[in-house]
Length: 334
Image 1 (tube, rainbow, N blue to C red):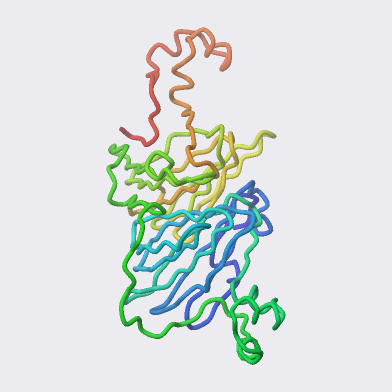
Image 2 (cartoon, rainbow, N blue to C red):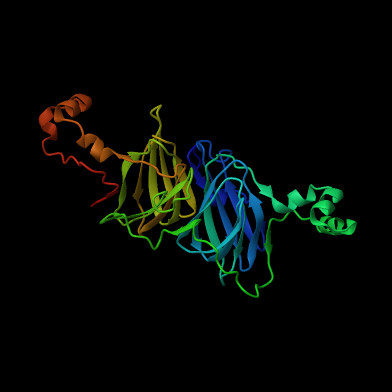
């Protein structure tokens, strides 16, 4: 399936791939409808490690769906270390250098979103390789042969396998992460559930947020929009139908299954429904740390029958039996 709002990881060539793992990046070059957002998936095999990198033009948020990892983030004032397991999310501010390694006994999977449709990446090894021998030696107090030795082993592989750790470093912080899977369900209905990973639950967030939700069978996310954020939906499990209405009246209707995703720009009317035989698990990334919500139920509930009758060319009495929600439904049936 092709479309301006849809992507499938199976159809996108990984940016990096070897025996240690892979990194697949999805930008507006792949999905023309992306606005101020991009997506990536990092797979790390046992002892696989992502070299320290940073993004000059994008904040980054991640959600771990498999495995156990060790993350080190270098801030302007300190190096901060924490572990990351399935169901946890974490945030990497723009320009902060970070490293991720798999410390578990199985392949690790982390899904990311960026608040830029085409994020740039700086790599530690390339930064070092760019230095002249004299600058390197003056900085680190080494002799002239040390820098040459590093450059002889020059590699373009940013994912590698590390030797076994003698001891896992002790975590020094939790301020960059939040266990969204273990958090209370903000919404729990017959149709499914919703868990919140926004600035309310992780105060460090800036420019990005996450909602984790599940849809039972049947289960539908109420048709809605977000005035301050685009929504990138990634399907972890199950099969959905996602509908996005554009301002020009065009309608994108997409069947989106596990390993695929779709995007609705800010204020675009959209909804999601479970059309498979199993429950659906979804990660929804937003390019705002506190996305708002306007649901169609409360919208119709805000207007008198006389106005609705003029909009839909019916009589006011036509809406007498119509249930008008006064609050967001979010996930139905309730």
